[in-house]
Image 1 (cartoon, one colour):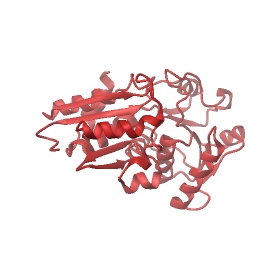
Image 2 (tube, helix red, strand yellow):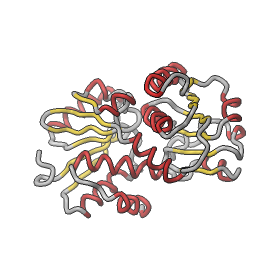
Image 3 (tube, one colour):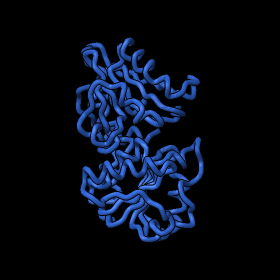
Image 4 (cartoon, one colour):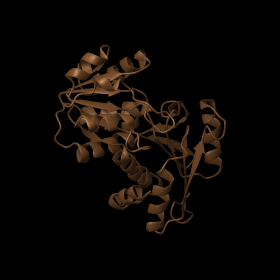
Length: 283
């Protein structure tokens, strides 16, 4: 479908996404560019569906003329077998957060990696990158881990409730970046004590899943702490870290820059990143 003449119809598939700012960011940028741009939430919780509904949702979106879909927790890896093609980045990361529907094909991309890297460069430009601990090794975690190693982290230690998942991601990262760059963690307290930085990529800390992904007693003033959650912007983890004097990065910049790239993939037009940041900040 011609994206400019007939407009853009996009959507977000995920669980518990009512607070997402993504639809407003896309629609407002569309308005600013004179595009007819509709962005819909496809919330598995609201629809009382589970991840098994993904094939049907994807088929329905194609049938209804959707231009593309964003994909979030818990579908970023489950979506992959349902796609026709993957971008090199999505294939390398093993997770998809953006699907372009065009000419009968489903093409998966990953804009989370770029989004986190942009936020990290802007928000924590000069921090030590020797040893970093990452909580979570799911779809978002895979993208963030790739970004961290590409941004020069020397050793990334991964902790995950399913240890096999952490090991699989570490193996993937070492194949891409060189042996020993990533490890599956065992001693959380020891690793955090020796770390320069801590990144949370789990959903723990979101408004609907309050708490912290690790005991706050493990935090220390020598750490920088980054979040990918943006609802709320100040999670419990960030609040504790700031109280200790840690440098911190909230999830806002990643949210904006993954949306900037997704807008470009859906519309074929360059997005105005500063304008989208201003939209995000105004909500």
